[in-house]
Image (cartoon, helix red, strand yellow):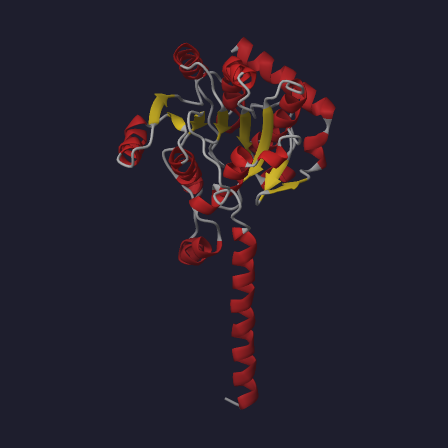
Amino acid sequence: MSLIWILAIVLFLICVLASLWLLRAWCHGQSAGSTIKKRLDGKVVVITGGNGGIGKEVVRDLAARGARVLMLCRDLTKANGVVEEFQQLGWTIEVRKIDLASLASIKTCALDLLQSEPVIDVLINNAGVMMTSSTKTEDGFDLQLMANHLGHFLLTEMLMPLLHKSAQMGHQPRIIILSSVAHAWGSIHWDDLNWERTRYNSLQAYAQSKLANILHAQKLARVLDGSDVTVFCVHPGIVDTNLIKHLEMSFFMRCISPLARWIIKSPAQGAETTLFCVLEDSILDRSGSYFVDCREQRPHSRALMEDDQDRLWIESMRLIESA
């Protein structure tokens, strides 16, 4: 092999490695949330999920700041394991049972919180599913629409009195709704939200639910304008969590998965933007905003249409009331 070919191969490998480092740096974004110096002593934080992935890292950070964290989880065995782990550090963490795919479970959990808690200072709608197969919940809804949007919609509405009480006490309560960059690929199937007549596409169903998250946040911010309850929507990034457990991976994808996990964010890095929106005070006048890598970004134009925001609000109310 000639010297020219050797140099060409070396140059090619250098370019590949440099490209991978740049891609990794872009995927990781910035870590501005956990570096904010702020205590949360006496504050009550409610988070859906929290027994793994991004949610667990959010719980870890906020509990360490002195907050009393209530994890709303479906898997109580796993959740109680997290509680035992963190309580050894002297943190105050509790678990409540919820299944976001069940209206009855959501109502039971919300009523329990309304009776037991004087206020909620932060509500984080964190839990969700991704690209599941075509599945209907016990109430007849598409699983992704229900777990990612409708369940959190109902929970938020029912817990609103406790958030308003926090505002009355001057605590500046916040609602954080996790969405995804996938919202840009989605559209709301107004005539068939639950994919009953349309051939099911797991990615499009997921994208629809994530678009619904931003539409919900935008509408909720308008509803709450003047109440001192603020709302923020978050894309956590491409994160190494168990959300992809429903995906079928080819042999090639399984082979490159270690490299992919090196490139994408860790759960702790994925928690940064959520933490930023919980802790940063300079954003309180930007309720309804969408944040990526701890910076405000403009979501896709479909998420900014007020007519669609209003329509989804009305349709969501109708669906949860008629089920």
